Image (tube, rainbow, N blue to C red; front, side):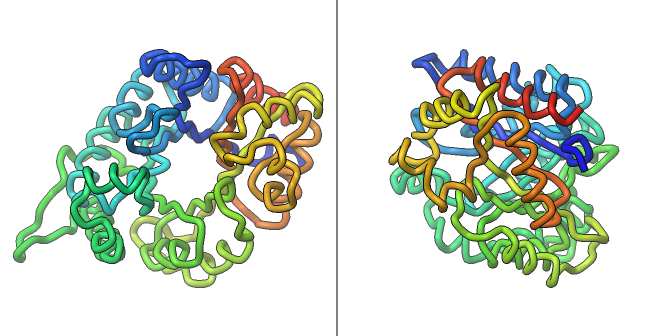
Length: 313
């Protein structure tokens, strides 16, 4: 089995590297999406974070509108919209609009994390914990809105515009609860291995065992998001990982050597990266890997993604 037979996608946190301004960081996001499309990656997703000085990605739906216009065929999506902060209809409207602009290319990835500091969350949401508790109801409403079945006071409410192809719905998470939510909803599930010490195998098993077919999809679909740093040599890859590691872990250098970190980040030359991903694929039986790469410089990030695909053929 070769890496080319495994679907690979890109998660972009839109980092502000090298002391650049937000404009430059966003231009680098476009550059990465275009490169990912050129290299043959399946998806480009971008995240939602609030009041984080090193990340320029507070509103993924806005950035995705721009990314879609600057690319031709790669799927674009959110990794993810933090649903407890919003009414489901607003999220559905935003992604219906994106799907109308870019038919057959849009993914709606949903998360339930706060996405920022306590102060930022308070500024955004008066009652985050209560809205998080209502996540199952919000997810149900969102799925009904995407399928034009949502009702308010016995009247159907449509999230317009109606796109020719509905967005794919995915739920993001790092634990059994999020896996159960995705399974009950009948949505795809994305396990965030790059920010979790839990074993993906256990969580994915919960999702697959509990999956209920729905109008969204008939079979369970899984993605594992993993941090990867690839370079021509292992030594160079480790240097880059240490330089970009502060965003993943404040302890930096030491953490990249621990067993815990080995679950979250793959580091090496192209052949080593391929071997590690294939071993993970065999263990997890996952459909796709979504790769997030942090390096000290943007050019090194692009090159890492390129090397991963080159070895796959």
